[in-house]
Image (cartoon, rainbow, N blue to C red; front, side):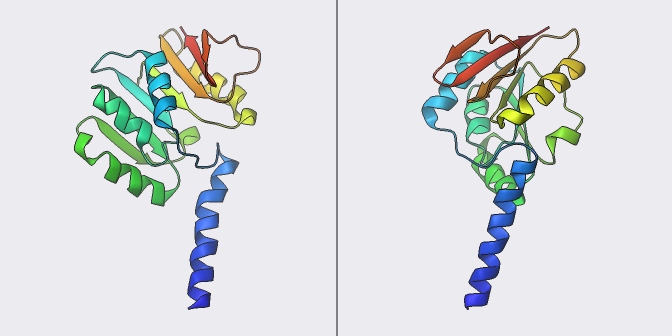
Length: 164
């Protein structure tokens, strides 16, 4: 019994801890933060938003409720299952991909939402700039700013960036 609990505990720590090597730990976004981020992105129904590290699917579900097409990337298989369960009702608008977003071929999108650690923001800026060169895309970042890049808008810990 104790060895089973220990195994489960170690497995959970590994599943939830290793993601820090790629982005950020799982930290659920509050309803208010989700609303603010999606309002900042200001997409129209039918437009596409990416969530890089979609966790349990809260942000994706809220975006789908607005009629947005959403693609979420998550590397934790337990969170992928949870996100798929949370967004089942909106499955025609939502795709959850069990994949490291750094190595994925992102689809065209008008908006991106992230909660990444500070040390990854410059790399993210470079990837967005390369992927969407000459195209308009907005990035809403929770908590962390892109170094040496001016945010178009800042509100309650959220930063909005515009790419062209």
